[in-house]
Structures are given as C-alpha cells and as structure tokens.
View 1 (tube, rainbow, N blue to C red):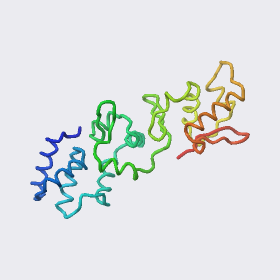
View 2 (cartoon, rainbow, N blue to C red):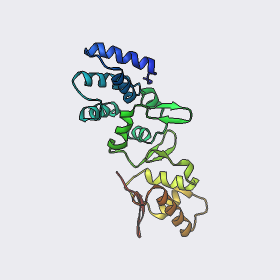
View 3 (cartoon, one colour):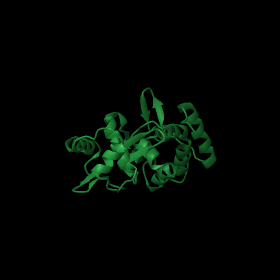
View 4 (cartoon, rainbow, N blue to C red):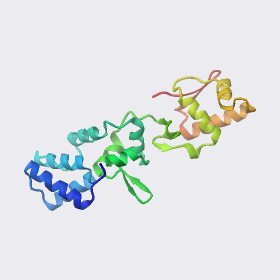
Length: 213
C-alpha cells in the first residue's frame, strides 16, 4: 500500500467524509492530508476521529492508531523506520516514501510518534539476510574495518555471552596469524567507541560481550 498523492488522498478524504457523515473545512482537509502523508489508514482514522468530535492533534487515540499501524513490524523494521533507513516492506506498506536520495517517514503524525514512542527496539540489530548490522537503526558495515565487523557479528550471535579472547581469535582469525593482544584490544576499543561502551562490555579476566536487551 503505497502512499496516495495529493489528488488521490483528497479523494480518500472525501469518501471517508461521506462514510462518517462529516463536512470538513478546506483547512481541516489539508491538515488531515498533511498529518496522514497519504496513508489511507491514517486518513480514515483522522476523519473518523473528527466525526467523533476529536481534534487534529496527538492524543491517546492517535497514538493507539499509530501503534496499531506499527504493531506488525519487526524490531529491525521499526529501527529502520525510526532511522529513515530504506526498507522495501515499509515502502510497500506506505510508511516510507522515497524523495530523490532521501527516505522519509511521510506521515507527519507517524514521524512525530516515532521520535518519541517506539520502545523495545534493540540498540543493535543483525540482519543476517543482507549481512548488515544496525546501530540505532543505522547501518554499520561500511563504518567498520572487516575484522571489526566480523568480531561484532560473532558477539551478536549470542548476546549476553562472554567470549574469551582465545575464542574470538580462533573463530575470527582461524589459521591466520593471530593479532597481538594490543591489536585485539585496539579493535575492541574502536568497536566500543562506535556502538557505545555500555553495549560492549569488557569483563576483566574473562572476555567481552554484547549486553543483551
């Protein structure tokens, strides 16, 4: 369900006016289309909301509608939506739109909701299908050196598990020459800078782990 353009969104608004027996002013129609961004579900809800005497503003009712629209998304999809990262499913659902090189959450009321209210999204998400790791919804792959990315994926394979230095070196370097202790420490330090020290903990004498959500 891709977002409707202004003309089509106006038609959806008119049909819902008739459905709910309400006559909107031009200002109200424009605000509904701006808030909905062309999302048919939001247009229907906002017109119904107005018919029930509601105002065109964020409220528990509009928050509930936003939650309903977002409820079927995975945490990774929510993270991509929150960070305006392209996701084919979100575009097909009409939750994102492409404008040149920009990816937008087109419905203002949903964009405002996303800024504040989506909770429970993992700080770090590993999309194994496309081999990408997201930090707060933003892709990390091209910001990390090859071995850094490999170490991060290993740690993410079992969040909350403490990986010893030997385990990391055996699984990442295999039969290659192991790095020095100093070099491995440097890699871990750089990773902690990029994903937050609170998310990658060093446990003295034991190893390192990704903090599980």
